[in-house]
Length: 338
Ligand code: PEP
Ligand code: MN
Image (tube, rainbow, N blue to C red; front, top):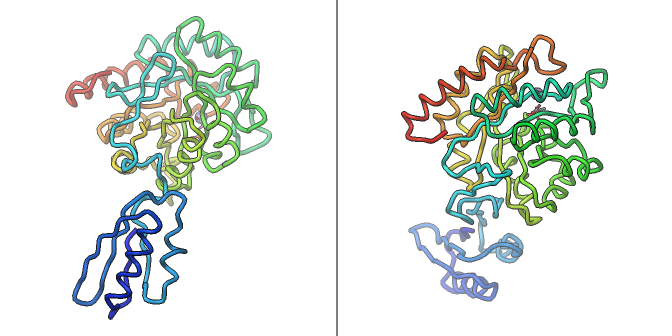
């Protein structure tokens, strides 16, 4: 915190602030300007409300927070990058990681076939929704536990660990039994009870940015999970709502280097939901990796036209294979391993 004193503050008043800070366990760094005196409070601010203890003094003009509101998610708290392990796949360890699979699990054949094909192309984690957060209650809602069983089957066949979405606290124990990584979708990014519940698990979490959430809100949501003791959190930029109607969302690529500066948590990009258009996925995949993403999550369906959800943004296995080849070329120029 930085404490700005009102102009004309006396030496006694400065001393009083320094004294109070000391009693609260803080060091004080006093800087006297021509017009103003500024005092930097140095120490651990967790559990101390300096606004209340110091900001109320009549000669204090304002108390400015310096540290980001999130603590455990911040770079200040941890300088080194967090590496999240999903099965034996590491996210954030320097090697690029690709998560691929259908939007929804539709049948055993569909998910097993997709898993086999994306693995051949270079994917390391299988995605697929069994509980789907659909805008309309009349749309396909997912196969629920049956879908989780098909995902488990695909994992058995391919060895790929599985990430799948949980919609509510009630079904978390069920989803956690099958999943290697729990996905919190964009619509649930600020479902704080759900964040606390996954925070109590010891399973990696893929936390997607809400479509109308700021980067700070995303990191605060991560904080909810971390503060419960689960440090295995991977962030995901999946596009935000803007005024542009040509794409489903606007993939906010600038948030990737920004998150990297502000947080030690790994971040994936989702160019499928980020654009809503399969013909834009390749370009935005490459752009996201160039911006510093630790990997991508991409929707792939054996027959996108027949998909029960998100067909227009899903790649065919052939298109995914092509994309992975382009990615390998880019990774080589960036000195990164795939
Ligand atoms: C999904 O991954 O299928 C999904 C629903 O994503 P989002 O929460 O980003 O919309
Ligand atoms: Mn989808």
